[in-house]
Length: 282
Image 1: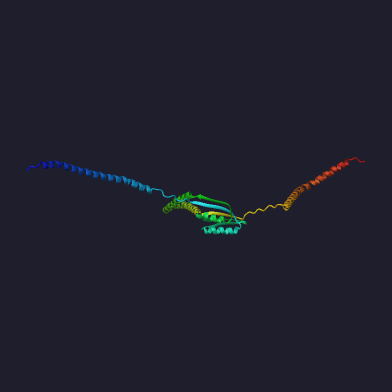
Image 2: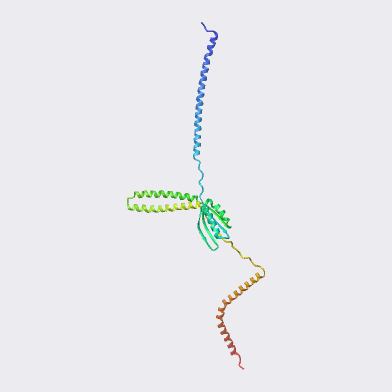
């Protein structure tokens, strides 16, 4: 049985359709591979930026260390009762967590040196200023951060040097080596102790501020009197002063007058006698 015309047409169209479907499948596979490669490339491109951000965040500098400051203050106050004001300064200093370091008392004034926590210095100044009339006030601050850092570095270096010398001491075999190393070790240990004391002193000054308070009674000037009695009193004082001046001058001149009186009298008598001898006798 021979194929019909329609079957012949379907046979001719079947192979082009198969070829088109095969080409479509190949194109789809290549697109998928390309997309996968693009995704892989993108992931590799993103990774360095993320690692860079992480590295940048880990290398950010930390916050600056607080500055180490030594604070001192001087205040002069006029008070009516010096003893009561002295007790008040003592109470305020102790209440703030400090203490009195030195007290110098005189007849009408007292000077106190107090150590108070640096953070409470301003509060202590306000309370003490209420004891009387403030005539002078001076507050100073000195930054010693660099000094403390330098001293700390020198201490670490000196400690390492001392440790090396101690190790050399253990390995020394002769008396000369032991004596030489021991002398150098003593010198460096002494310098290390001095550096540690200096750092401790600076740290103490940073923690505790120094406050010097001078307490004085108010100065009273006498009122000037006016009127007749005041003038009479002033004139009498002037007369007394003038008389005292004249008497003082007379007392100063009198020794010279007494010394010159005898020669002057002798000279006067001699001149008078010669004049008498020259007169003609009648």
